[in-house]
Image (cartoon, rainbow, N blue to C red):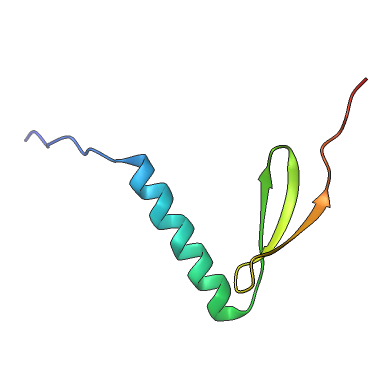
Amino acid sequence: MKTDKVHIDFKVMEKSFREYVRNKAVRFGSTIVYMENGEVIEEEPGTGKKTVLKQQLQTR
Protein backbone atom coordinates (compact mmCIF):
# COMPACT_ATOMS: atom_id res chain seq x y z
CA MET A 1 0.00 0.00 0.00
CA LYS A 2 1.31 3.43 -0.96
CA THR A 3 0.81 6.38 1.37
CA ASP A 4 0.45 10.02 0.37
CA LYS A 5 3.17 12.52 1.13
CA VAL A 6 2.69 14.91 4.03
CA HIS A 7 3.32 18.56 3.28
CA ILE A 8 4.31 20.63 6.32
CA ASP A 9 4.38 24.41 6.17
CA PHE A 10 7.10 25.15 8.73
CA LYS A 11 6.33 28.90 8.85
CA VAL A 12 2.75 28.15 9.96
CA MET A 13 4.01 25.51 12.37
CA GLU A 14 6.53 27.97 13.88
CA LYS A 15 3.85 30.62 14.42
CA SER A 16 1.43 28.15 16.01
CA PHE A 17 4.10 26.71 18.31
CA ARG A 18 5.21 30.17 19.48
CA GLU A 19 1.60 31.08 20.27
CA TYR A 20 1.08 27.78 22.11
CA VAL A 21 4.21 28.25 24.26
CA ARG A 22 3.30 31.86 25.12
CA ASN A 23 -0.25 30.91 26.09
CA LYS A 24 1.00 28.13 28.37
CA ALA A 25 3.60 30.41 29.99
CA VAL A 26 0.98 33.09 30.69
CA ARG A 27 -1.46 30.52 32.04
CA PHE A 28 1.05 29.03 34.48
CA GLY A 29 2.83 32.29 35.35
CA SER A 30 6.19 31.21 34.04
CA THR A 31 8.83 32.80 31.80
CA ILE A 32 10.24 31.89 28.40
CA VAL A 33 14.00 31.60 27.83
CA TYR A 34 15.40 31.73 24.30
CA MET A 35 18.37 32.85 22.22
CA GLU A 36 18.17 35.97 20.10
CA ASN A 37 21.15 37.43 18.22
CA GLY A 38 23.58 35.32 20.27
CA GLU A 39 22.16 36.47 23.62
CA VAL A 40 20.18 34.40 26.11
CA ILE A 41 16.92 36.24 26.83
CA GLU A 42 14.34 35.61 29.55
CA GLU A 43 10.91 37.07 28.77
CA GLU A 44 7.78 37.44 30.85
CA PRO A 45 5.09 36.86 28.20
CA GLY A 46 2.34 38.53 30.23
CA THR A 47 4.14 41.87 30.44
CA GLY A 48 6.62 41.58 27.57
CA LYS A 49 9.52 42.43 29.90
CA LYS A 50 12.82 41.05 28.60
CA THR A 51 15.98 40.42 30.62
CA VAL A 52 19.35 39.57 29.08
CA LEU A 53 20.74 36.61 31.02
CA LYS A 54 23.93 36.23 29.04
CA GLN A 55 25.32 38.71 26.54
CA GLN A 56 26.94 37.81 23.30
CA LEU A 57 30.67 37.15 23.54
CA GLN A 58 32.64 39.83 21.79
CA THR A 59 35.89 38.97 20.06
CA ARG A 60 38.66 41.35 19.15
